[in-house]
Length: 589
Image (cartoon, rainbow, N blue to C red; front, side, top):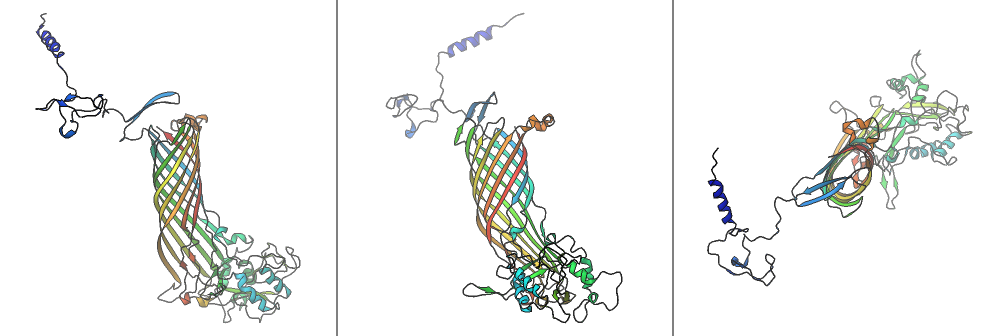
């Protein structure tokens, strides 16, 4: 086989002569470039006053083909480090425009408690029902019911042995159960090799109906035949007495109407109202008003829904020593709170008191109940009767002493209105958004168990929308305060109003957590590929947002539809506080 050696000889000769020439590493001189002294300055390692033989820079600037050495290559990383993580040496690098190199996702079950409202459910300037009727009973003198009535009034005022009792008393928002919410929190976070990173989070939590039912405070043997009360109220004679209390014919197989009313008209709760008569004197003294009372049903419902999201940027650690790391953070937050309050009440419209003779007129606004001590004091088979005073003052909590007087029932009103149903619903939607800053602190490494937390403060713009509506809010024992329905307006006593407000709400949030590979130590769970490398996380978060309007506290309790007086909206603000326990799983990659 013949081999041509001429190519090898040619390439070898060119390479040899090439080694005798100089290679230019900064580019080609432009045509006409002269050889002059270089201006003073530190150049190419020379002294500040040295000279460099080269072309003169145009206008005193360095030519584009003179570059410092060593230069920062566009092919190199801006940040590079070698770190030992869990016994394994890892090389990490980062550029200014790049995604984080380590990511974590966690999902958590949220069990949250929210702050209740603070104020009276009713008008604070109006009297309670006990305060309203005590003078009426005083004026009755004690003739009806003898000395027991005097003792009864003393008990109303809390002066009988210093102990008061419930007689359609109002409640405050603090008497309601604290709202309990359940929901979900999702978090995606990324971290750079230098410890900085980002965090995107979101949550949702909602509460089932949180209801206060005044019937739960009544003896369980009471109020189980209210459908019969409805039947009794269907027929009224010209004197206002239901037919079944004085039936024109004998009714067989029907319960005694008097016993039905005594057992099923209940001592529930009331709402003090401004009916247009409240007057304030120059010295601050107020008088007037009355209480709406409900003897068939009294229910208060509160609901809270919350959701939100946010984005945080976490900087490089301000302090890092061993397993301790402290990092500042900044970000944006959005939180929405929907706070709802609802009231439902029903009243029979029946007046009832205790008298010795049947010709005594009804006492105005009076619905008399025995002291609610949970005993059948007169031995008639009914616990805490309506319409009479059981013998409870000779030895309270005893029984069998016999009732004083007889129960007297009468409906002073139109049976087409009673039983009357009163409804009020108020909803406050708050949308909060704005910047936040904080600090994060972690104790422990990336592997194994660790503890930590964060503290964040923010200043949020709070946009609020308040919607109030309802029907038949009036002093329930006074039919004349209502507007009578007509063919053109079947519900003339309804009302509805809406307001919007914008304010600024400071916010502070404190969170602590514990996290670790717990699933690795549980025999069954560690077999799961999903849980084998996951961490269990538990945390507690306390959030306080100032200047929040609550649904139960933002109502002006007033009602007299005949005078065009309906409940209104007031923007009474307070601090809204939530505390939550979160339990979840986190994955890292």
